[in-house]
Length: 462
Image 1 (tube, rainbow, N blue to C red):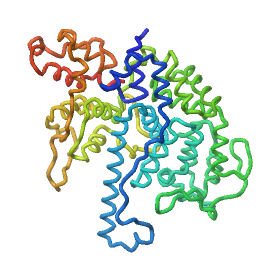
Image 2 (image 1 turned 30 degrees about the vertical axis):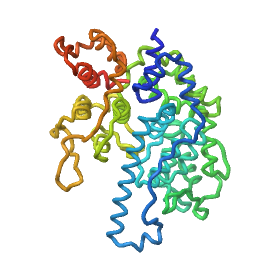
Image 3 (image 1 turned 180 degrees about the vertical axis):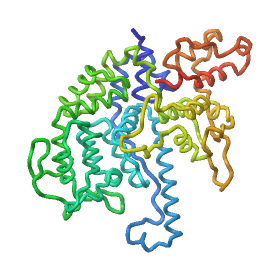
Image 4 (image 1 turned 90 degrees about the horizontal axis):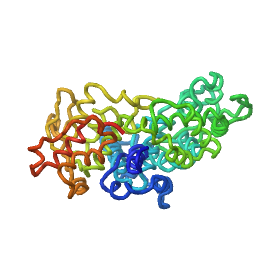
């Protein structure tokens, strides 16, 4: 059986973004059941809101059309900077979430479940705030809120969904990817659901509006029921289907437990989700307090996503980037850019994160971040600086390794390597020595040991 310390580390890898110096000191001796309580029921506070500075000038449809082409381009560039700020801000929120870390991890999970390209900072901010607000609350409320998000409405073309010519994109993905899953509905169900969502739209300011004149008020037949259904009715009918709970449970299991699906465990999660009225917090409590969650086959079995990896580096080493585009560059190079999934199915997972280019970047990332080594541009896309042609060959980042060094203060140097691995890695089996006997007597011994440890392939696993 794993020790309580091992359980705590596994829990914080899956319910959070790894274990940092503060978490190690605070939680490693805490009974895991008590830690689950702290993560699921943190001190009462309003969910953190993603915010940006107000536009100068405030733009609406009428005055936008009056702007010159140059002014429009300046607004576009300004919006790109705001979106960049949202991406960077979210990464730092994940790294510094403290007791709200599960809320941030659930927000990232829902971002993959309700995958949505956000074209513009207004809709991206609204979408992120919605995911955060409902991340640990009720799936029914979350689903309805996401269906009304302008980012989702625009991404899946519900903006063009009108009674004269229904657009089926949102209805199809609602059934296939968000709720009941492929094979559990008919093409006719999609057509009828699309009619129910006609008129759900957004305005120029990036806010949801219901266009009554574009809504189909006629009778619809959906999954065996008939009535003058609107979008909310369709969602209610979907949530009545136990298959919806099972589908969502399978996605939770894949993200938080294992790529290999265990039907019995998923059925457990599904029953809790359905019987609780889709209470997300109760469902996650069941996952994190189940004995099978801590089975050795699940520990260190998942490849960290690019976002999880970057957040853990920020958390461990208090990274501060002087080039604001550096984090976007790394997301691009590693294959996961926040607010920009590859398609409506979201990002891949597991071994799909690894190819020849991303593997080399992952293994060299510690050197780029902590030792300011030059990046290998034979395998990486260029990171352009503010100038038109100058290329940044280093990531221009400040780091602070001292809080981690302090964790190992006073430990005999002969024991230090194994202790560092116990803290920073999920598994320490068959790892060859990282430090030579001569290096053990050098002043930078502990620092080198930490950097080499986080450069191991094993550090890529959670």
